[in-house]
Length: 266
Length: 276
Ligand SMILES: Nc1ncnc2c1ncn2[C@@H]1O[C@H](COP(=O)(O)OP(=O)(O)O)[C@@H](O)[C@H]1O
Ligand SMILES: [Mg+2]
Image (tube, rainbow over all chains, first blue to last red; front, side, top):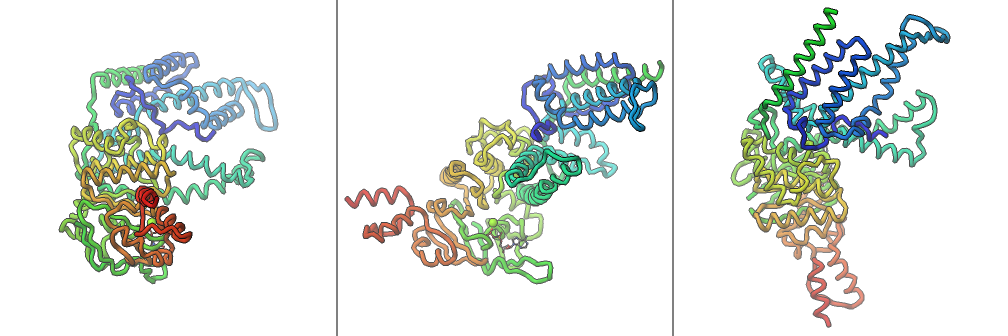
């Protein structure tokens, strides 16, 4: 189950979306995040759905892969639904102690959880279609103007790309440790939340210890291969914005501005 | 040539005491040779390896790589470019998200122009037999494939020497053999100097020189035949003999005399054939 997380799991395909400049994809993801917060009516999600569907289609990423990525955030969605459904004032349908299930609450819960689902799906496209190193280059490219203000653009980008690179490795390792602990009789499934959380301690401790060893060895390996920060570094596949990038950026920019203005005016 | 003279090293413990890990090491590593270093756990092999490209700078004594002394100065980057290094754990030295990105990482560090990288990556991948996997992420590779890419990543930087610190110890027999084959081939065809640290005796029988370490010292050094003749010494410091030598030993006990110390399967088979 833990293996299903898709963040950082780049899937190589030859598609329009894959070929876009990482900077374009990052900006588009950010515009999408902003844009979706301007949406006020449920039916408007049809447009978001269309936009997302077209993007997925163009990326050639199998829908199943994307939906799998939703699984780990299921608890967050459930929490959102509960919080909104029970703690919104309005016409009460059902009451238990101070929990009031309201019609307005239900509507809001549906609305909010849809927003989260779209957010996750759309932004996971970024990491599914962009390899970590390209993502790094993209982030670095966007932060570059801030270098003059002593923002460590390269270091931030390097840290993020290494984190992304190690997510699958650490997930595999978690899986292995869990199996090893299960073989010794550990039980991760039964009991209440406190018991479940407690049962994770024997998983987390070895995981942390090994993560520190990894960090140590990785730093050594990087140094051995001549890494010394940004100094004198060149770039593999330096990317330039293409016509496609400009068109897509323009499209999303106009769309976001339009949605924004409309929501303010009306 | 790498020239190591009177090298000493101690680690500082938290109580302020030093633990001696390398003691009076003297060794010359000839260019183009295949040198193996053996010794049981804690004998100082890794500490020694880290000295060869300046990951640890000598506390006392001297190391020269092609005439450049390893010191805490700007030359250290030149030396890291001349002496490549492959470590034990394949996962913890894979920096890129895919093989080609991992190879590119080293090239980016040493300032290879972007338009030359593609060729060098292809070339290096071909040399380690990983050309078909360039777009693969590390978690979709076997241990042997990961170590071969690590070697490829070092080869792309075109070093004169490659130091490998137990590169096969986390691999299955197949992966181990693949890695050793790649190393022998690169040594023969490209004349790259290989310094292989291992605790598998069968991996060292083909080397030009075997260096045996114990408790931070070099106790034996010489051609494999000479080294494995000193059976008692090797057993005393907790090492074994190569499988062929072991078998020869057993045969001797039951009265089959095969003469000189044999190290490889091929030699053993030939000798046995000659008997009849
Ligand atoms: N970072 C360190 N700090 C303190 N002691 C160390 C460190 N690394 C290794 N040692 C000690 O130095 C000795 C030699 O270790 P090492 O060079 O790793 O040997 P080998 O690679 O042959 O197993 C060991 O006794 C080990 O405990
Ligand atoms: Mg070691």
